[in-house]
Length: 60
Image (cartoon, rainbow, N blue to C red; front, side, top):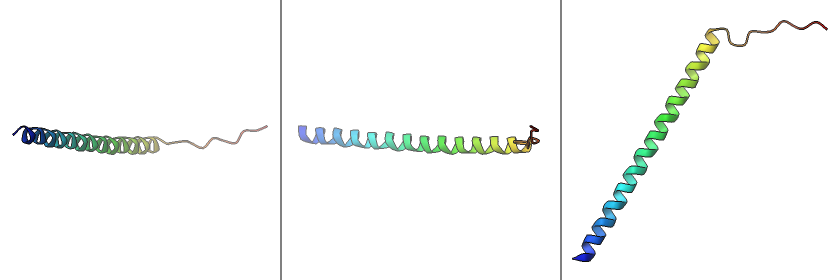
């Protein structure tokens, strides 16, 4: 009887650890996608505002 309880506890702990790892991975992927979208929006806004305007050549 004691062995069954230990095995059940180990199994439950393993499942909980796998679930936590899976949820953490999903959170990291979502953050990466959000950061990529934010950077893309920043670039588009920067380009719409003129980006790097060409500088006139300097005279020596």
